Length: 114
Image (cartoon, rainbow, N blue to C red):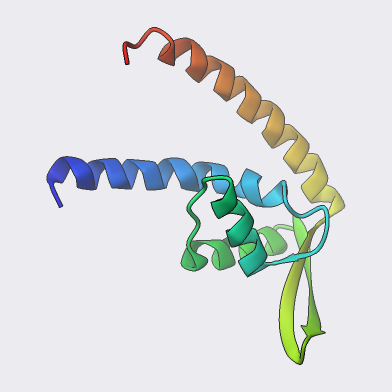
């Protein structure tokens, strides 16, 4: 891998990590298990690794932004996550902040040639 490709890959990973909390919180209105969250992110073009998602879910739970429960499906226990009332408030603020950031970046990007 060239140095430029390596730099670009790392920068893309940083950008994705910065939006992952919001992406996850936007999916937790109904209880979901980790792999379902990964699949949905991939469907919309966000590449999420299990080694990134599961620590994030534990951190969100510790912060009180989501709650988890164990359910058994087809003789298999699954850990489900659902947004908490605090998580809903935080998500609302993060969405507003994201939209402001998106507008600002759009203004800066539109002056660049393709």
